Image 1 (spheres, rainbow, N blue to C red):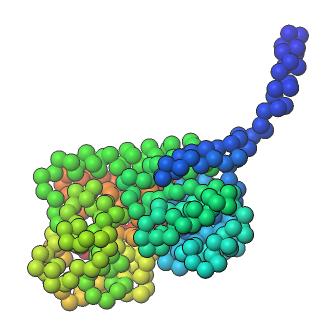
Image 2 (cartoon, rainbow, N blue to C red):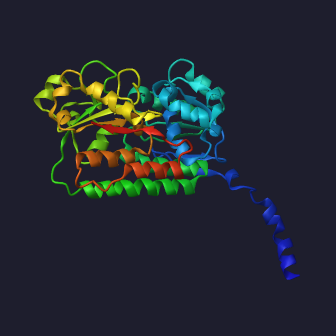
Image 3 (tube, rainbow, N blue to C red):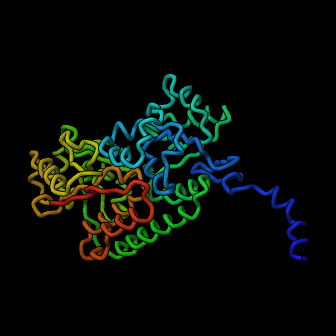
Length: 367
């Protein structure tokens, strides 16, 4: 009887409580230190950088169901990654597409018409993200909640905060904690192994190799440049280029030849580049790397002749799974010290535990 009276006494409080946690206010701090508050977990998300779908898909089992719109950069720049997304989520092609540069023309108006309850933006910077500061200002003025998340610009600094931020905003804290542990454990193991190596080999990073004429478009700072340094290499571009991106002449490369050649691939699949990514057969990846390396100048590099030429999927730049690229880079740069690293096993684990759309294909290759 007493327990019945206790239940009746508690009933008003129970009825007043929110029915589900998702309806509670959520709040988190974004990468710019801004406090982002939402009345509930978002249901109409706009991606100002479309390739952030890769991150969303590691935290939510049905990320496409959250989208009110997304920038066209992923379908345009990485069309090879779209088929598995379409097979798993056929409605993805019905999600409204926005231009890559939201600050130009009527793009911002189109975004606001979508009535998003959250807009995710990359760090304001250069290139396609140069106008994001203005976009953020307009959204704030219109009262549209926005959060800055980023992995590409400075992956080793921003990945874990971005995972935790999205986990908090989406009500997926447990998944975010598990993904953070997966990432940090593997990253820290790379750091421990390469931290004791006495030498750091010189690396030629050939960005989008084979997709453009000449030699060699490269990255001096950010993204893959940071990964090379973390994995125990010396990026040649960082020694001579003042900006983040640029080109090294073939003459310079031949004068100061690299000890390791690294090509990024995936954007120019079937257009002369190194073929990597979803659905790419390992043999096709190797053949494409061989074609690129057969070009005048590159074929004569000692690194190529000695079997120290490799390709890495450019899409790793847009996902926390670049931790697997760190492992593979460390294994290539320091074969003895990093022999125990197993990025292949890590990819299988990620597909099993996290990925809404599993990564199945070729994401690295060597000759």
